[in-house]
Image 1 (cartoon, rainbow, N blue to C red):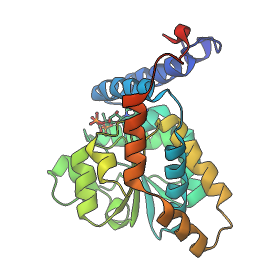
Image 2: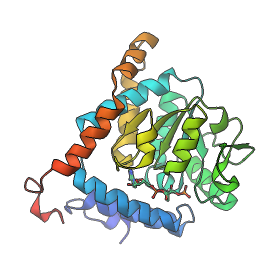
Image 3: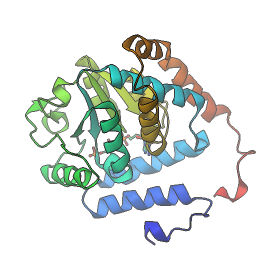
Image 4: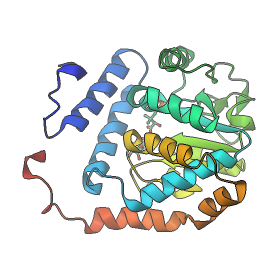
Length: 256
Ligand code: PTJ
């Protein structure tokens, strides 16, 4: 079944489309096989969260937008899952906040970096970093630490969707302000982040873009207030509470 053949009234439509995109990403050499496992883990957390954007995740998206608009050198890091799931949405966000896009892979190969960069260009990206590989995230072994010197290495704010905990910690140690998108509130990366967005990438990226457009005319002082009012620990606690205390009783029984 292709994406367009999935009936839109299917109760699991969004989930089926997502799976299809990841599968297609693997077939095109964009997504790693481990990306399939990451996807399964994400789906389980999304199901437990009720497959919705919590009010606290919406607050995080607004704080992320304000953080990006205040940044001098913001970079959005793109891996194989992000490229497969939300290429156009990621390019839109980069445009809305004037950020660079950089392909940055956990399982790094030059071939996959090139394919992902081409895929982003096919979805409207003017420039994609990550091909130079002349910088590093200090404290990591070579393959996992490869970045561009004028990209992530020089960035003040980095958006790291679906990042692994080690790299999130290493970026934090380099003094970067980190915006992490991850569905698992127990994962080390959102727990390291300045702004953890506990939401599905597919909902979170367009939501940050929408907030950025809404905040486009805000003064730096107003943006700073949005950032200062955001409470990262409260956002982590709210997602954990939604998972632990949520009930399946209100859910649609056909949704399986
Ligand atoms: O393309 P590469 O080589 O850079 O590899 C990318 C993956 C994602 C495979 C790699 O970074 C990895 O193995 O990540 P982890 O350690 O499995 O972590 C992925 C995290 O993302 C997990 O906490 C998942 O719950 C979460 N996740 C998965 N899908 C989504 C998600 N979070 C938000 N939205 C999703 N759609």
